[in-house]
Image 1 (tube, helix red, strand yellow):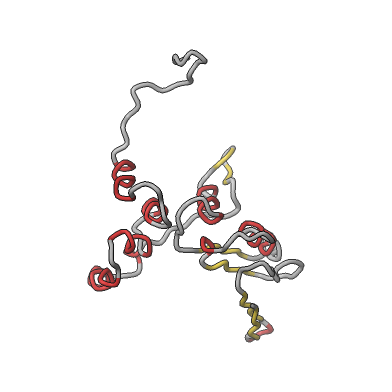
Image 2: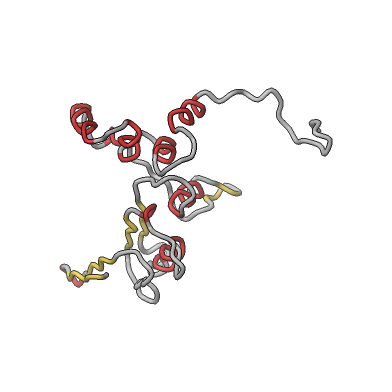
Length: 175
């Protein structure tokens, strides 16, 4: 589904839904926003990664912008993988062309608003899924994980210091 809105100064806005019929190939755009990317479904015809990668090629390098934004939707989806990749550096350069930017609820809402809004959610986990404080909380609290989210969060904050570090030899001893 795609719509066009003609703006001022010859600008046009195209609005489309992510799906198997990617209208982004072969066109051109100055800026693209992929909204709620973590919820893009992989299908037999095309994956979320292919949708974003193919469509993003419409934007001229260093002349436009591509934004990928979303509420986290668990782990092991294209959005979460790209979020992780955007934080990696190799030889002093970012691995991904995207830069990670997280906005927690506290940047937009007051404590009073939050206390009222929390009443819309049956559990604290559901609240954190929709309104996380930080990226770790966003990805741990969302989706349908196998392990208990609260225990995972506690484990992250109380990481044990390793007794030894190094490489293991074939016999299980440290080298």
